[in-house]
Image 1: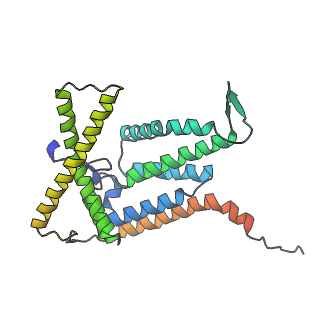
Image 2 (image 1 turned 180 degrees about the vertical axis):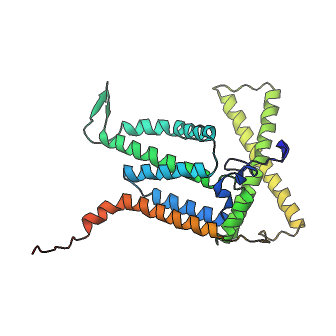
Image 3 (image 1 turned 30 degrees about the horizontal axis):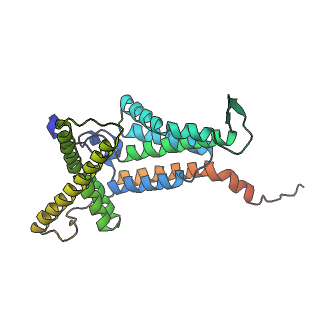
Length: 274
C-alpha cells in the first residue's frame, strides 16, 4: 500500500493499521458499548486500588490495539503534560492540616490523594478510549451509532463535522498565509487582537458559505436529511467472548471499589457456637 492510500483515522492509526490489533475483529457496536461501560464505571471510582486496576486494564487494551512502545509512550507523555498544571494545583489545595511544607506552600494529604485519583482516572479513560477507537474511521463509527439507536441526526452531525473540519482548517491556513504575505507579525497590541478578530470572522463567513454549497450539492444528489444504511454489522462469536471477559473485568473492578463498603453495610449472620 502506498503512502497516498494510507488514510488516517480521527482517533489515531490508519485504516491499514486496524488489521494489526485485536480490536479490529470486533463489531464497532461492541467497541462503542464497551467504551461507554468502561467510562461510566471508572468515572464513579474513588479508591486508588480500583483506579490503578482500571489503568492496568487500559494498558492491556493498548497492547490489544497493537500499539508500539513509542506510540504508547508518546501518548502517555502527551496526556500527563496536559494535566500536569492541574495536578500541581490540586496537590496544594485542601482544608486539612498540611503534612508537608515546601517553603511557604503547604501540601495537604487530601490534595495529594485527589491528585493521585485524577492521575489514574484520566490516564485510564484516555488510554482506553484511544485504544478502543484505534483504527475506527468516522464513517463506521457514525454507522455503528446509528445501529445503536442513537438519533440519526447526531450521527450525521458527527460524520459531517469530522469531514468538514479539515476543510475549515484548510481555509484557516489560506487566511493565515494571506496575513503572512502582508507581513503580519503578531504582537501584544490592539492591532493584533483586531486582526485575529477579522480572521475568526472571515473563517465563520467562509464556513457558512461552504456549508450552503455543500447542502445544495447534497440536495441535488437526493439527500433527504439522513444517509441510508445499506449494509449492516454482524455480531460474531469473538464479540460474545470479548463481552464475557469484559463484563468479568468490569465486575472485578466494581468489586474492588464497592465490595468493602457492601461488606460493611450487609449484616453478618451470627452463628452460635455449640
